[in-house]
Every structure is written in structure tokens, then in C-alpha cells.
Length: 116
Image (cartoon, rainbow, N blue to C red; front, side):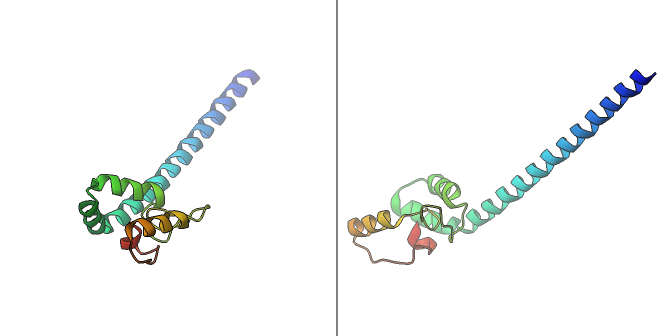
């Protein structure tokens, strides 16, 4: 009789742990989904600007959108650990190199139009 109760307790414990694990995984997925939705909303707000630069540079809009999604998540104020800044995560040396080659005036690296 003791053995039967012991086995039942193990099954109940396993069921509770599996249920808790399922709820935890569902919660993590929900948070990830909300984060992805927020990123897509920011990218949708940047769509006209991305279209403008895609046309100007002859790059596919999906490429520009993908770079912005991967590099900054659509946050124009993003700064990485290595001091890359803005939507496209431009480092100071790369910015200076581009300014020298393109002969354009320095702007605000956090301005989405300038950064792209």
C-alpha cells in the first residue's frame, strides 16, 4: 500500500512540474511574440523612409528592412556595446569613411534618414 501512494505522489509531482514548465514556456513565447510585434510596428513606421532609400540605392527594401531589424530592432536610438549607433548600427570610423567617400556633410547619426 505504501508503494502505491509513493508512485502516485511521483506522478502528481511530475504532472505539476510539466504543467509549470508548459506555463513558463508559454509565457516566454508570449513575451517573445510581443517583442516581435513591437519591432514590426517600428519597422512599419519606418517603411516610407526605407522605401525612399531602397529606391535611391537600388537595394531591395527587404534587405534594408532586414538589416534594420537585425541591427537595431527598429530603434533609432540604439547603441551597441561597441558604440555602433542608430538604425543601421554605424560605428564612428565607418561613418567617417562614408563621409569621405560620399562627400556629404556630417549629420545626426541617430536621425533615421541620415543613418540609413
